[in-house]
Image (cartoon, rainbow, N blue to C red; front, side, top):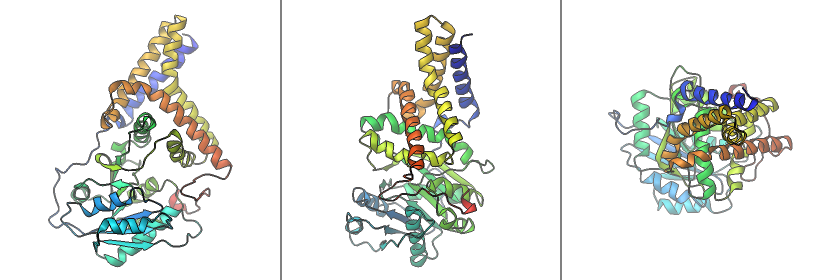
Length: 391
């Protein structure tokens, strides 16, 4: 067998293993449902929204939360984290005088904290003040439009299964050409990295969450050490999930109705989002970076290259193995594309998306080495947290 045939066969072997042995991540079938037992008494919930220069989406976020069809007591705390674009005033205007919205200013960022988590901590403290008996906190972003039944379904899920954390990966915006190419791929890669069925199994060590929508049981958060336990984490949602899963079961699913309002109209919008934390995801390790690049090449780039090369050189083994690996990739990617309303043929573009994401990851490492890692809204977080609870 030629070197090309060996490489293509290795890619095919990898895809068979991913499809059969990685928790069925590719099925994209972990969805929340309203068909669960409802609590006899709906518990009180407080939403906590950290907001820094979120004028573009905060009004829709606030309105969608105030319009929740939730039978229990529900209030909102928005932390205005040094915004310069009128975020707080826009949020108040959207609430139209509702007493259920409380807007509080952020505080000076202390050493060892990321800006977002310090704002979340401020919101959690305020939630304890205004609603000390609330059983749950809804940690959400200021650019999320919640479906009217979202909170009711989250609480019913948590209550019926006695879960400590219920999180939804909301439907990300996929309108511009770059979004359509890269956003479903991002969701696919996240599911592959953290197979949702493994996350949702109480005895499996895999833990993850999606920061845009996380319903947390307050007692579990306290037992896990509170927000302070992850104070320096850049990938704060997954860090919180790891801590919470130590004290109770968690659940992570996909949403088709609750959606993100954040726009990624250009390649560089998505590039900045990924490059901010990709190297952090690898533990800032050069070895892991090299392993990741090699793995991405074998898994995503070799199949189409081998098919084309084999066809041009008359190497049937290489061409057939490359095509089989590419078709396995398409098969695995298809359910995620269905979620995002894209046609079947779009799955053949996954190698292009993978190449771009590989370049983003390398650039993330470059930024870290230059001391520009973790950039977000005017802040740079390039330290490694020394708190052992976050490791």
